[in-house]
Length: 104
Image (cartoon, rainbow, N blue to C red; front, side, top):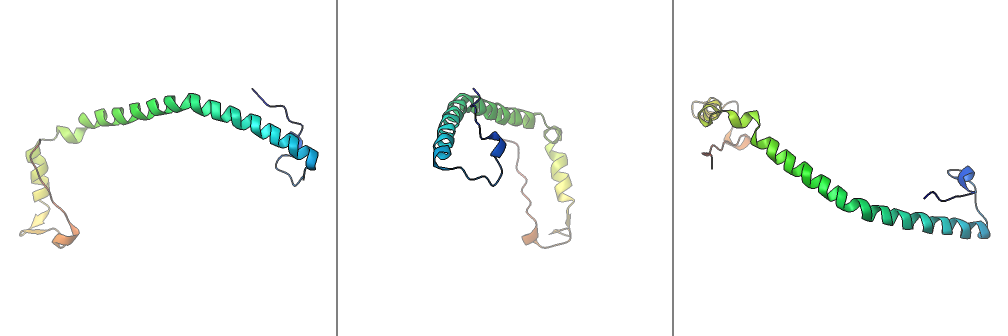
C-alpha cells in the first residue's frame, strides 16, 4: 500500500515543514514504518531459507570439486616438491605451513 504524501515534491530538498506539517509527516512515517515491519516479518523466513539453501549448495559443490578428485598421493607429491634439501622452497619454516593428512 502506497502512502499518499503531499510532501513528495519537497523530499530531498532544504524545505522546513511547519508544526502542522510535521504532524502529517510523522503520521506518514508511522504508516510506512508499520508496513516495513510487516514486510520484514514476511520476508525474514524466506531470507533464512535462501541463506540455508545457499550454504547447503556451497557445501555440496565442495563435495564434487575438482580438487577432491586428485589422488591424495599426487597432492602429497606436489607439496613435497615445494621442499628443497628438507627446507621450504625459498624461505623459512615460519613463512610456510605444510600439513598433509590422510582422508578421513
